[in-house]
Amino acid sequence: MKHGKGYLVLFEMILIVGSIPVFRSVWMVFDSIEFMNHPAGILLSFAAGIFLCVMALIALNKVDKEKQTGSYRDNLML
Image 1 (cartoon, rainbow, N blue to C red):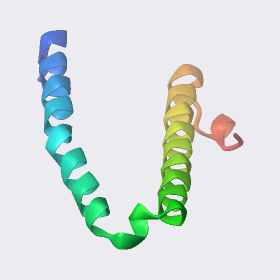
Image 2 (image 1 turned 180 degrees about the vertical axis):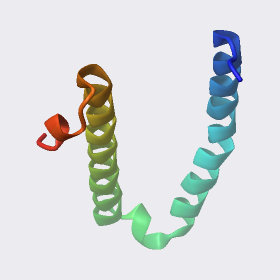
Image 3 (image 1 turned 180 degrees about the horizontal axis):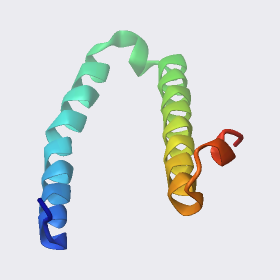
């Protein structure tokens, strides 16, 4: 079934609005953990966040390159 761009935009907006309570809940959980209120906990969560973002960006770029070149094998190397 093919849907228009409006359909896609609607669900992207729902995803953004739905992520707000999730983000707030995770923030409150981290605030309740004593270790996360110290500099070591903050730096650890920052490093973990950077790592996860880099891994996601690498995966997204591989998918984008695959769409451009049509070959997954060409994209095995970073």
